[in-house]
Length: 116
Image 1 (cartoon, rainbow, N blue to C red):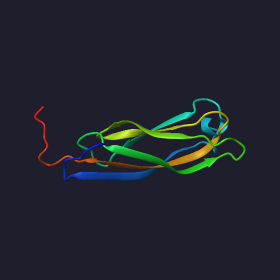
Image 2 (cartoon, rainbow, N blue to C red):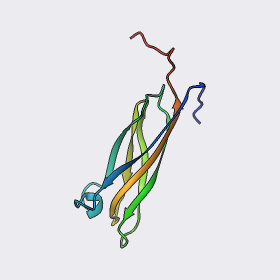
Image 3 (cartoon, rainbow, N blue to C red):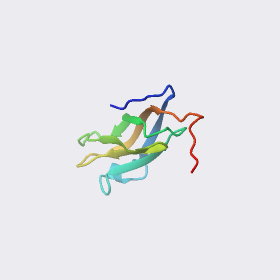
């Protein structure tokens, strides 16, 4: 459990298109090549330390004749941002995907400053 000991709690959220591969024959749609996509997200303001981040698919468009397999995660979380990682495998063909995310954490205070 992350304990936040400040009255300065920040919540940042957004929705981003991760990819749209069906129009140009990308790897997610053809089922060939790397089956992982990473998308760097920058927070609107930096947190004091790495916040808690939750990600979820808000839209997926997959081929009807293949198995639906997907894994989505937030990785490399730091005070300024994180990476959304989408993975699929096997015969799954993904035309496009969109992610919604939310970060909750302690914000910097105007009295927080570093000399060096």
